[in-house]
Image 1 (tube, rainbow, N blue to C red):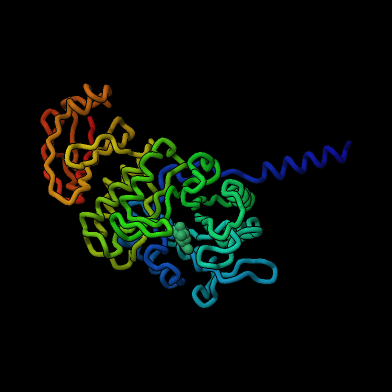
Image 2 (image 1 turned 30 degrees about the vertical axis):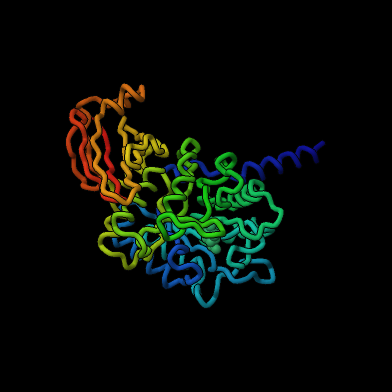
Length: 395
Ligand code: GLA
């Protein structure tokens, strides 16, 4: 009997010790990830310089905090199974790098994979989950992106739960970013597993291209992510992948549309460009605090396509705290478009809901960063091809 009590006590303390972390990623995580621009070409110099840039170029000020090293930092395991960073590229080791990033007031993220190998063939986490989680915690990792390559017959939900429990057991609060590309509909199971889950295959550096293995341009990623709005909320985000803003393909207009739509969708804002050397225009886009405020709004609602206006203008809506609303008119076409919005048509009669909008509601243009009138009059505007008009309505 005594024995039984002791076992029960032991089990109880193991379970209660495996702490859960409440309050992680209450708003969509913001940061930088190495993959989109640098792929496997990562080393500690790049990461330190990126941290220096984020801390001093206005990004930290605007809310960015995570510096995440994606695939290829790891090379092998030692005879005890400990995961080893590439000694040539990361000679100071991960703890020193994390300390450096923390000294800048930023947070540190790493990538691994639920399978036996990562997507780039580096050692994966399978069978080493608890050992790896302990290593990450001891280094000072704050964010783990966990991929799903080389998983053989593994089930995604179970695999991610094992790693989640390993992170709990390691007792360091670590944001857990699930990356199985939406293949097992994680929005149905991942809410208490990680704080964000990829909803699509990889984002490509193009407007609407498709590659045979599934990668696609940002507008197509957006289309796949949009219908999942109802699953998002504080601590549980749909992740349409990292931004391609500033990677040399898009015009500044297209870049700001991409950034705005990610903000409207309450997507994690993980930049994927070289933030050490941005053009002033790209820097201004990525640090527009009024657009970021939409994304970081405490209600945590994911915006969605509300109407499609004549001529292929999409009107997106995101409800905000303080009874405010963000609207984004997105001209997806390659022609200049004019809009003439009669507010009564959108708020009140047709939709049946007023969203608190009266004819005294103030309209603010979030890219012009100024108030442009009230809803008493029709909103008339010209929208360039691929551009957005992004406004906030408030009392
Ligand atoms: C997958 C992920 C990408 C990136 C690469 C790294 O394709 O979806 O985001 O992490 O692996 O190999």
